[in-house]
Image (cartoon, rainbow, N blue to C red):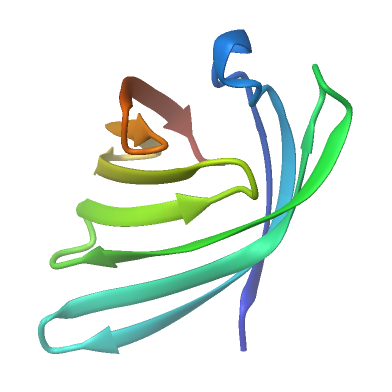
Length: 106
């Protein structure tokens, strides 16, 4: 059964990504780590654009993750590290422009 996630973020006015998303996620645990697939809908508050969002990620140990996210405008590879309830990482906006990511889960 997939889990449902709601997120809010300020990912930078320059990227057009401040906004909200609602996604369903499914994890598959394997000996080599976990694989996660997510899909849903995102809303860009600065452009008032509603669009699909989706992607996948792989974690060898539950702490480090690599993946790709697609948001109908850009395809962004990313790498993150979980430290408690915090997430730190970076991504390449449309495989071109580097950006950083900081978040929390609660």
